[in-house]
Amino acid sequence: MAKFSIEIKKSAIKELNAIVKKDLKRILSKIRSLADDPRPMGCVRLSGQERYRLRQGDYRILYSVEDDVCVVYVVKIAHRKDVYR
Image (cartoon, rainbow, N blue to C red; front, side, top):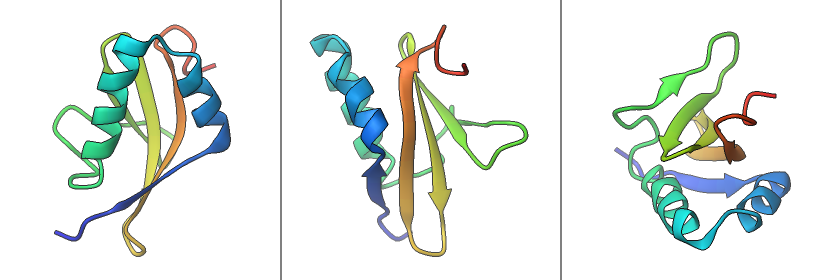
């Protein structure tokens, strides 16, 4: 399988800056792993959208995958109580 590149939306970068340091390391590690496998075990396709959800503790990473250009777009990173609003 080809290695995917990862692009993070500017608003998602702002959300990352607001996350506590201990959680941030695990979230970044999870995002980096998407380059090798964009649909890992445990990811869920969101209904009505072409996006996926990946859990990391109390946080959720929402992203979309473009298979034809091998890119993963990270759209939103937020606490589970706020991510779907």
